[in-house]
Image (cartoon, rainbow, N blue to C red; front, side, top):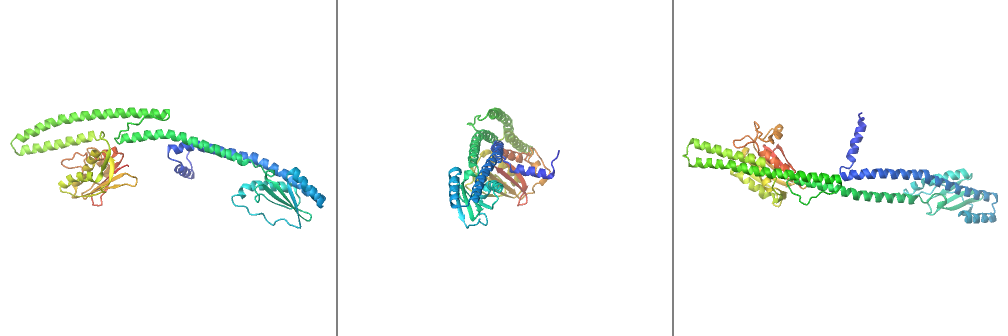
Length: 454
């Protein structure tokens, strides 16, 4: 069953407003039901108990005032009023005064904006009770005095003013219930925050360890921590990390052996050709051997990667300048723009190889090469390599990153390349937790932008 469009819009709006972190969502799962329960209990308490008690008290006070007014109207003499006032003081805790010749106030006293809503239920209960018990006009004020309610009734010859204790008009202990509910909610929230924070911290440590391992960094101090399920996930991660490290070590040893085995016959062939008489065939064979050696280096570099290298802080500009020397020797005009003090924690050899592939690729297809490095607002690093070469069509950007890709009009198609330059560069960038994107260069050729996280 599909929701109407307005319902889907509301659901999307609600999802955007909900917390995105595990800590926030866990806290919401615990706190929201508790808060709703507290609100419901408080509402039921005030609606079914507090207002009922207040109504009963208001009715009792209205009955006492009606008795005082009727008694005075039956015998409006000073002696009778004195006895009436004394009896009301002793038996009912009411302070009654006669104001001869006075009239009732024309309007209610204006209460502060924050006070009036709180006393509105009290005023309604007292108003209803006085209307039921009194036939004479009356006026009252529940906000003027902190401990009393001021009630005035029109009588023969003036106004009878009654000051009644506030607890005679309404239940004064309701705020204690609200206070206890608030304190209980705050304590429960604090306990929930502490326990959830402890559990989420274990998951954050696991995520940080996995991210660090993905970037090639080692986290020797990481140990399983937290709930049973989190510890199980952490243990599985450690086992997986051990298997991957053993695989990397075995592959590195194998590649080292393959490299040695391949280079030995190549060296013998190069030595043989060096001792042979120079002619057109030996020149071609030397060129073929040189190309074969370059291809083997490319294959081994792509298969080996730089995963075993440790990350360390390096100055970015000297690293870029050292890489660009090779492009200058090819005859390209190279311009480097970077802060001399810009540093980044990277695997130096891996990053050098990635930038070298991009710069040499740009120099091979263009005459001008510009390399710019800057610090991103997020704290990461961005290195842009621009050239004025023919570039690559936008629809072929992703295909250019595929290993052994040979685009018809690609930058990868050259006499020495094997289609691994961009693939190796992106592998290095992603090994650091970043990526490489291609776009049109302001110089007219290709722009390759390396973005690495902080």
